[in-house]
Image 1 (cartoon, rainbow, N blue to C red):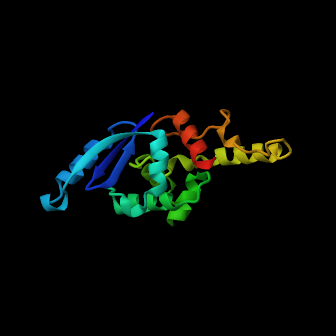
Image 2 (tube, helix red, strand yellow; image 1 turned 30 degrees about the horizontal axis):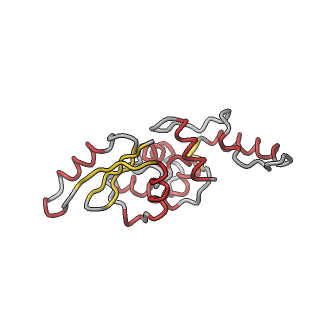
Image 3 (cartoon, one colour; image 1 turned 60 degrees about the vertical axis):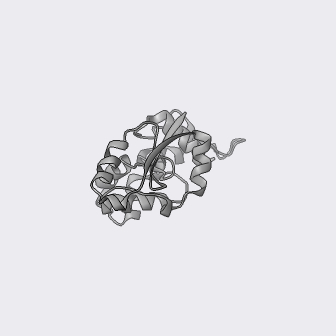
Length: 174
């Protein structure tokens, strides 16, 4: 799989499997005074390169265009320990427990796939089901490892499809 990295002045503005974020980024850059932006460019990288790239990216290496609320959600996502979270848990971590839908919308439009791990946010029922399976699997040879990959578990919606979401979860949590 190829990923498209969009950079503004050497900072990552988007990572996606297509150019879906480019019109928004272009509109945001166009609205800035000319002296505030020097270059905008894209390049393609493989999934392996994405994983390596993500290991070294810091929050300061990102140039994100979003509302203060979206930026707060994305930064909270960026800072999460790698495990599965429900939308309710994330809303609580953002400090807006009553704002689950608004948080879910911000997660859905995350422009920086994998680096800001929106793929780790799943429906609460998924976490409950995974816990049930894990509890029953603790007596097996594998002690329940990799159960989050079972096709029988609904990982929820993802902009690039459930199969890729499962793959990203596997890469992130293995």
